[in-house]
Length: 328
Image (cartoon, rainbow, N blue to C red; front, side):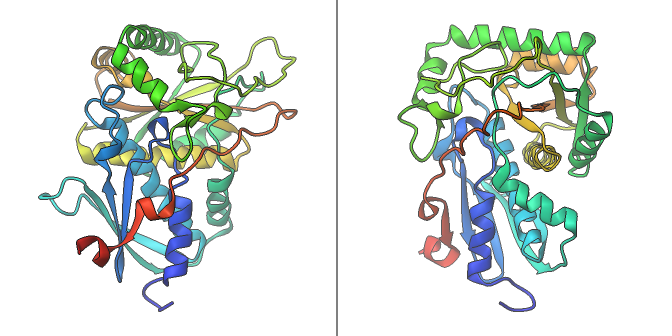
């Protein structure tokens, strides 16, 4: 390890945490190339979900989440980062080049880094405990620090509009044979190193839960009659590749902050994958002032329930390579 650059073991430890980031259908559509002084993030378009994500918006958001995970993991190991996003216009899949410098992590930085391994996508019902306004403000600030608008969707008309968008999107997808076949391929008992395994999914109880294949995760045993959750809508001022990458970074920031605060969370994107329902959300909730990129459901999991199991990850050799070796 030098004063300017972490050694190989430190880099690979950070990357091992970076690939714990959430991604659409746990497709993990990223590839990392490790150079002498930089780490490069590329989109792995071979993992593109053609029916779920026709314009690769989800893919870029997923890669942005991994980029933020890397920055947080590196900081927890004593290294700050300088990120050059979309550094090569001639190579659109080259999403970021990351340089490192020595940095002393704060206690909050260390807690955020530890949250990477604790975070789960919890699709179960949440309890009726209210999410404190101070917690919501902390999550909103975490997303805003990534240059993204974070809108807290309350129980008024905006929440009703959002729920209608979920219902409409689910109905449209249910009539799309290509989408349902793709969803089945990327979920269920066959999910080994990628995809959403049966052990991580619950039987759908509403439009916000996709009908993943063979769900076996039991709902938490709750005495609460009605669960309570908060919906956070992440939006950007533009809708280009950089904005979508930034939205992924904000998604990671919000989810890790929620985990650090002891809450459960789950990123949701189904109504944003169809032009009609995405346009409805932009018009009805954002007043055409931004482009919706991600919805995050937040709440309190039942204390009597074990956390969901971690989802599988691709072997490091599939997603991490030395830069020179890859060029050869």
